[in-house]
Length: 212
Image 1 (cartoon, rainbow, N blue to C red):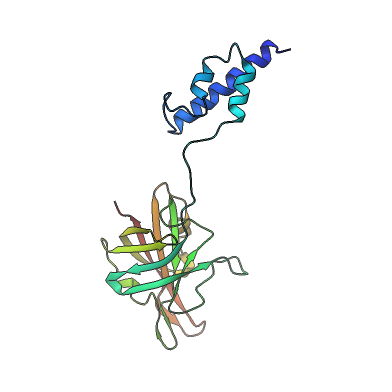
Image 2: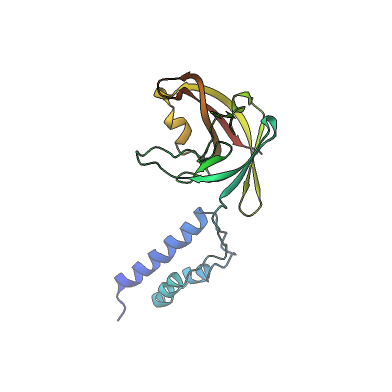
């Protein structure tokens, strides 16, 4: 036997789902998502049908994950490199690319083109000569950066600014913090070289936004 409480719960459930679809931009009352619109009008008389409509809801819109980045191209400084997938090193820091001439994408973060800050790292040089991001410091606002994804699509970014910072004051929030709009960060070493540690004392960071 269906009680008044069960009937009211069914009505509230379907009404909430209909409101969620509207807020999420899934279409108006004529979209016909699994009969939700027509069911809302009859839930008072047939709560069992309403519950079945909720259980059987399927969006007519398909969603696919953004393809992973596989290549980086920056014409302004002659960069054309495949992208290595980077994780975290044993000490918790982000890995660096295993080859001097190849850049790497931090796979634990945002994929280029998605809302958030996608981060690509590359070496500045090696003992034998310049590496993939040797000329990164030459980029200027307005320069274009392109990322090629696994499905062949391209996502284009425009450089906003460049900064050189001491590694001891690395701007973690600016580089990795989530953003509502798609952003790209390119990171390499720079500044003075420390012979004692065998590393550069600073980082060069390029900040770029998605091109319109």
